[in-house]
Picture 1 (cartoon, helix red, strand yellow):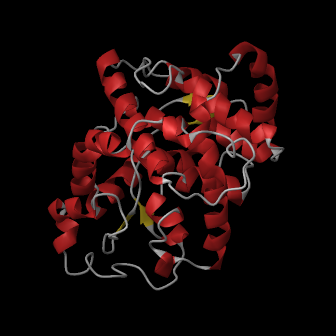
Picture 2 (cartoon, rainbow, N blue to C red):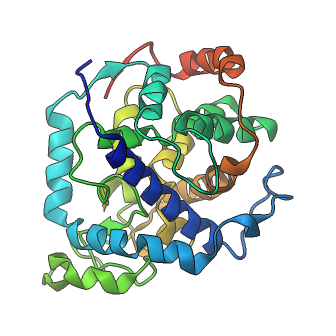
Picture 3 (tube, helix red, strand yellow):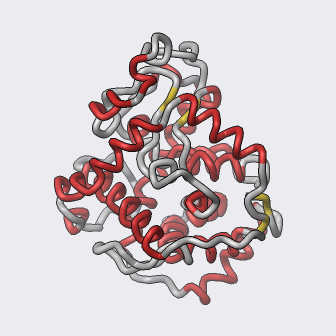
Length: 300
């Protein structure tokens, strides 16, 4: 595996932005249609106030919305297919992600690996199937993209959206798309853009980041079911699974994916403030679980 060197400061900045993005999404969920047991008694008002969190991410989203173009997304996908970044197992990837950042979130002192374990443990406590537990365990491993040569934070974290057609006004800070050249393109600025009605989300480009990257890594290197892959690919696709945007691009298959993304979301957002996990105690269980769905090593 190639050596990766990144400054602690850069890792802290990514972590701070990622956590602020989560804070916005947590606090925006004033009404949440979820039946998850662990979530039903949690006090969601303990997170930072919505406007404060928004202030932290405004500049981030302005940059993301201006730079996530069709041209960039084609380039990112071509680069993904053209080289192998590393070859390692899932647990090793979790350990690698854990070295990316120091604790910089004022809402929690948990490490990245603890967040992954807490997400998986919350799913496990609710009696969800093993494939969903392992999905929770790995869902943020795409943030390794920051170590593998991303262009910044804007192509790793943040809410995702469709490129290649008109940017939905249900995206966070929709006005900031004015600086994206695709907003003024004769084709890309139309309702359907380069797509056909009800073409299916498998046939559209969702903005490149840790979700899309990990989905492309695991879709052909695991035995996760379609619902698990949807949870990975769409967990940051808030304009779709929360706000109802891009429904005109969906096909029948996507309704199952939408249900999966909505079922996963509370475990992602609200588990990070739970008590810390005993990593070494849980490791044997999850390594056995990983082995049921993944080979010992995969290409990254």
